[in-house]
Image (cartoon, rainbow, N blue to C red; front, side, top):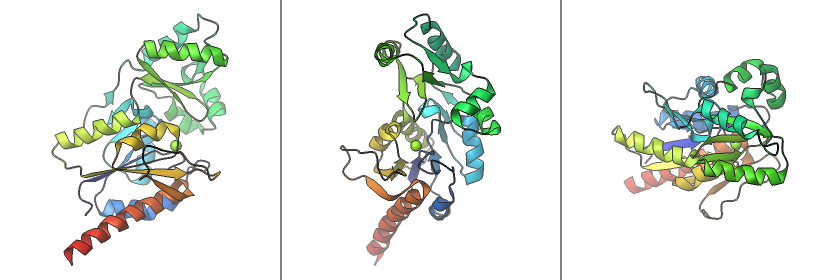
Length: 266
Ligand SMILES: [Mg+2]
């Protein structure tokens, strides 16, 4: 039985191929979920503008979690933005540059061309990536001792620092796990039943999200390594990387529970 299921998914390296951003290997599982009316909710460090674009391509409806959990959009409702919001985060970085040990270069310091160079994004994608509401990606330009002190400053200000592939992200004291719990509560408050939560992710910044759901799925990376989640020996670890692994895991879960359902009816 799959009524009340909700699927939360990271995008880069998970539903989208890490290098090509292709999602087509996941299409069979996406179609099965759509046919069963199970929502697929992206949970990403990308901006809402980037997610809107991707959701159109993937034909996803329902909520979307952007900027590592700091922004949540529910269809037809006001977007939820975790304080302090973008401009105070920018001020935090700029004010701290008064200390030469705290060198940072954020998206807000770069021209569009520099964002393109540093991220490898196309011009249109970069334009969507700079429309930030509640988190700032930045490159650390100080040394590692400075970073340790800077982390303490971030903590003291009740903010969060997340390490991405290349960029660090400064945001409210929230994460993908907090956001997933917020979405589940929100759906329930609107009278929707949520009976099983599934989350798929490939990186350390997906850990909080994976720990909070009923069925965590760890997507293997291209180099065959994978995130380890010692707390959850029940996690599915995919054989294949990216969207092919995504397809495998969702089909496995659907087969398992749909089959169990039909056995009960015999
Ligand atoms: Mg990822």
